[in-house]
Amino acid sequence: MSIAVALRRPFEMALDFALPPRCSGCGTITSAVGLFCAGCWPQLEFLAGGCQRCGLPLEGTAADECGACLADSGPLDRIRAAVAYGEQARSLVLRLKYGRKTALARTMAGYMQRPLGELHRDALLVPVPLHRWRLWSRGFNQAQLIAAALTRLSGRPNDPFVLQRTRGTPKLKGMSASERRRAVQGAFALAPKVDVKGRHLVLVDDVYTTGSTADACARLLKRKGAATVELLAWARVVAPVRIG
Ligand SMILES: [Zn+2]
Ligand SMILES: [Zn+2]
Image (cartoon, rainbow, N blue to C red; front, side, top):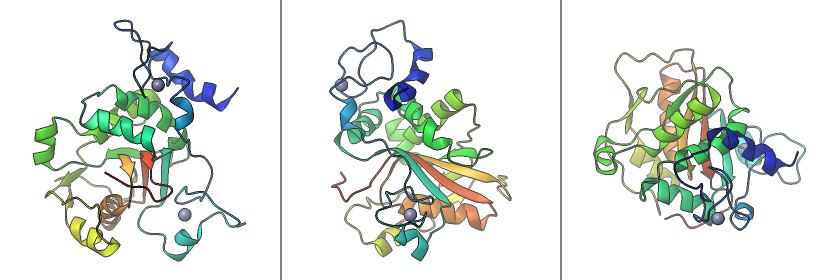
């Protein structure tokens, strides 16, 4: 079975009878919900293998972790994403967040099931929270929609009320690593009465870019006693690209 067929199969269960299914990339009519057309499919770069810890491609080394992880592993125990962040992957994110195409959360979750299989099997899925002001203006948290869709597809539990964003954060674009770290410091808190001691958690987000937001969440959860904190995103930056 080709990888394309293996990745497409879950969606055959979820046919939508109300409207003809459309390509998640460009809107062309396709044979089933959650598929990409022949033009869009090759534009997605599915990630597999790579560094045991961060998932980035390993080049010319026999080690199972990349040089960056060996030097400074950071608070996340493992990072996985379905696809590399590129034009097509970005288009889905923008249409979900700003075009309110909330069905795309299910499409993304479908392709995130395989990398989810590489993370802790007893983990609770924890969407990265939005600040309430942004939640109010957008009406939904895309990370929460993706986590809920993952739960429906995989049966893994999710809890959107573990983490809270206690203040808004500025756009991190263009900041240095230390500026980003400062910008998100103290921006997250554990919800009252939530106990994560000894628990395994998987942070869920739409995109993993510089990692400063996820790192801030992971540092907090580790400080509160979480056993492992991993991250699963729809897309992650692999090579330096313009983010906007
Ligand atoms: Zn298409
Ligand atoms: Zn690595």
